Image (cartoon, rainbow, N blue to C red; front, top):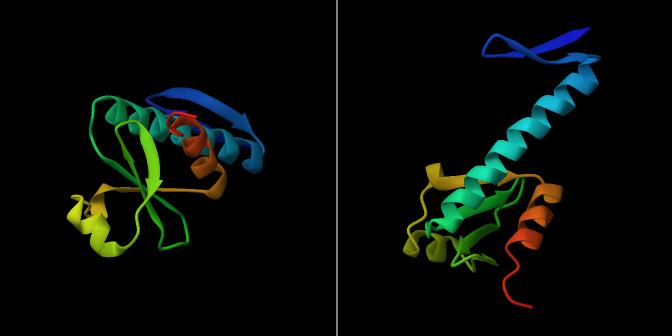
Length: 101
């Protein structure tokens, strides 16, 4: 049995797989809310699908791929400003920040 304890509170208890999945989902939800809050506030938000060099920017509420590393730098990107996400999480961001249809 594995326990996930945060701020002195048991958040989950169960098998390692269940508990780790619950923790990872919680971390993702926090990241997603942080990305959404920053984007809603007008900040440029950079995301990268884990394991790939492709970087996306959320600007003016729309997620778009950047064409090159130079484009990333020219738009104010730095290594510490990129949020790494899984492919599934990138798809969630694409849906949330698709822009006008």
